Length: 167
Image 1 (cartoon, one colour):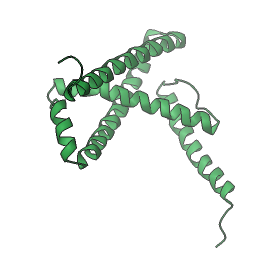
Image 2 (cartoon, one colour; image 1 turned 90 degrees about the horizontal axis):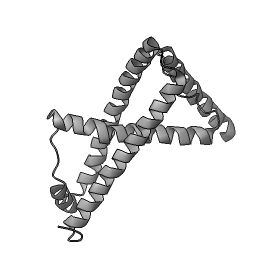
Image 3 (cartoon, rainbow, N blue to C red; image 1 turned 90 degrees about the vertical axis):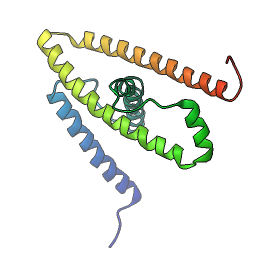
């Protein structure tokens, strides 16, 4: 059986996922969620998906994780104990990555539910697209400032753990 040229294979693969992306965009549009049209250039798409993935991950880390710890769904970890254990157990790093993947997936579904709800509410309240965009930018600013703060605390705790900085 003769295979299609590699450039044709890439085009078929791109078309398959581009159509799939369009279907998701159409579904979200029917729910009232229209953040921005999907980019058509592959490089733009990669950048866009990277950014969306980063936002979903940050929501999981900065919003979902503290809520789940507050309601005692997951226990709060002891960071110095984690640092000590990670020196002895090499599989711990992989387990943390898997744990973070599940948190990110939960965050994605949570964001989808919240997005559908907010689209419905803003439609009923008559909030314009311009104001939705402004509120989204403000939410992103707050999210990334909180992420910066959380990461700064991790760096400080790691420095203290290794005997540097303020005790």
